[in-house]
Image 1 (cartoon, rainbow, N blue to C red):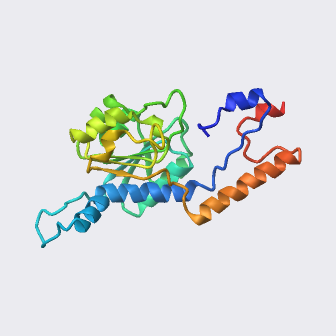
Image 2 (cartoon, rainbow, N blue to C red):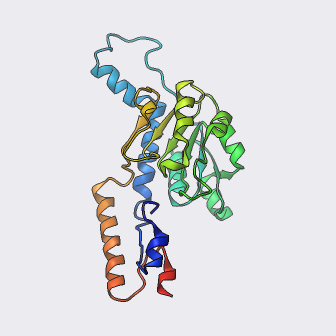
Image 3 (tube, rainbow, N blue to C red):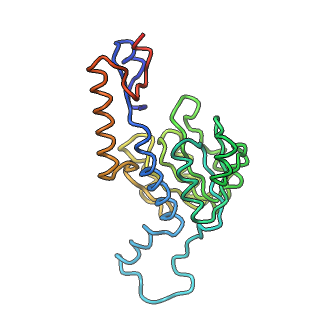
Length: 247
């Protein structure tokens, strides 16, 4: 809800609600789809065929990178991060994560996830997937310094919020092949793109579609309606962002 001035709403006694939970699985689906797409160069290969470049089988044609058995680094381990871990388990990936709030040891064991420091996560991840909220502390959490720590063979996936990544630093890292690639569903100044992304072949771009399925959007609409009806009935909405307005 970073598009809403919650402080201004609270000052005017306006209740702000959101629709968490119901977005988890679809967003994780897209995050993993982007991970696969950038690793196996799906968008590049589609363009390769459409532009008429595929003439015959060649040994080194359009090589990508394996996903199975690689290390997935999850920056943030809430609902969506944990859903990503479940998907990664099906690909026999090693799962590392860093987060402010750690889940129970039982959940860590169930998901096969290991807690590490942010620095170790950056160093070890073959795929770094971001699942953190946008706050003053997380603004540009991934910048030039962090990208320099990552493997040159690593990929960055962002389905959280665009402003947690310094796009200028990312464009430079992609241009110089400091990292292998990126897949982005969110951007710093949506719907405007950093112009550097447009010409780069090693980035997959998606127009903020994490929840864009018929089932999930309907579930979001129903939850938003539940919030609204509760407020109109004088009750506390089930997903109230600023509960201080009720006091």
